[in-house]
Length: 303
Ligand SMILES: [Zn+2]
Image (tube, rainbow, N blue to C red; front, side, top):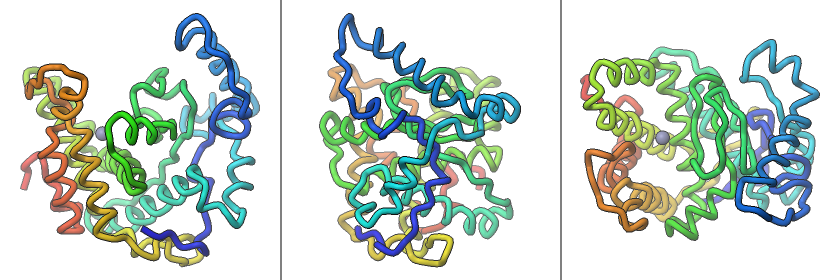
């Protein structure tokens, strides 16, 4: 995979709530004492409140969708010559590519206007429209505030603990989360929740269908990613190789419910799956990639 050095990174599609400097509080390591999430959790909660303070009024008036972070540091960093060497800048550019894809694909394939959604970079804890969350839950999409949330250190967990290495795992993860945003825009998500309420015995199976569709949407983006451009028309990717796609497929496989249970030495119980097995996740990402058409992602079998 090669990113275009001339592509402009639009950091306004990101809401940086990591605190100053990004990645840790001002880069100062805080000694962890008295258990995880204790003192450190409180310090971060206070900091988030302070960082958000300047925009507190806006946030209160407009709901959770408003920026609460401070993007100044990120903006400067991502305008510099070596921006593509920075994990956070690259991730901002992946977000740009994914949203550029849907801006065209959603009206073309579904006749709906795409509404942009920001990605919130946070560290350790974050307050969302869906409640408080910590990094342990992994990246997620919150339908209540239409935002994608990620602690970028998740990629280290993905590589070190789950064995999903390779850069292309990153845009795959983001494209999966934006897949949920698209499901939200199309009403698929709300429909699925209603179905779950009517049919609680099938709640997990329905969740699997939603997740596999998000994987398939990620595949459709991957197929079309080299066609995406920044605002001035500069291509975002100069190339994506078969190896990159293989990395995304490997990642999909490694985060299958059965793979995660096995790694944790827990029994594998398909009834408890909420995201799909390794084989299914791999299959649906590949299906989206082969067709390049999100319309082929009909995991609910509605034709
Ligand atoms: Zn998901």
